[in-house]
Amino acid sequence: MLQNLRYGPCRLTKDGQTGVCGATIDTIQARNFIRSIAAGSAAHSDHGRDMAFTLKAVANGEAEGYVIRDVAKLRNVAALYDIPIEGRSPSEIANDLADLYIAQFGQQRGSIVVTKRAPKKRQQLWAERGVLPRGVDREVVEALHRTHIGDDQDPVHILQHAIRTGLADGWGGSLIATDVSDILFGTPAPSWARPTWACSRMIW
Image 1: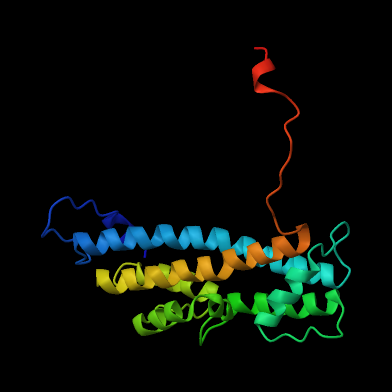
Image 2: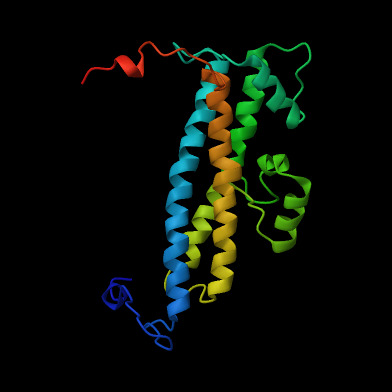
C-alpha cells in the first residue's frame, strides 16, 4: 500500500493518456466526481442519521427541551410507510418512525423505503437504470471502493453508481433530516408580516 502512494495523484491532460494503474482520463474524472458526491452524501446523510436518533430520544423522553411540534406531519409521514397511527400517541408513532429511518442507513439489500415517495414513473425509471439506493451507508462505501486503485475502471459504470449515491442522499439522508426537523421544530410555512419601518422614511 505504501508503495502505491508514490504513484499518484494522476494528472492527465490529454486524451489517450493513462495513469500508472491503466486508468484513462475519463476514468479519473469519473472517480474524482463520485468522490465529491460521496463526501457530500456522507455529510448530508449523517445529519439525517443524527436527526433520526434525536427523534428516537424525544420519543423515549430522553431529550430534554425537545418536543414533537408538528403531530400532523408525524402522522402523515408515518402513514406513508404503513406505520399504525390510529389510537397511538405521538411518542409511540415517533418511536417506530425513528427506528424505520435509522434502519435505512445500514440496510444492505433491496431499496431504501424513502424512495417510495417519489413519483411512480420516476421510481420505475430508477429501477430500470439500476440506480435505486440499497442503503445510505452502503452506497457511500461502495463509491469509495470503486474509486480505489485497481478497482472499477469503467467511467460509465462509476457514474451510474454516482447517481445511486446521490439518490441515497437526496431521497435518503437529506429527506429524513427534513422530515424529522419539521416534526420536531414545526413545518415552515409562509407568513405575511407587516414591516416595522417604512422605506421612504429610512435614514442612513
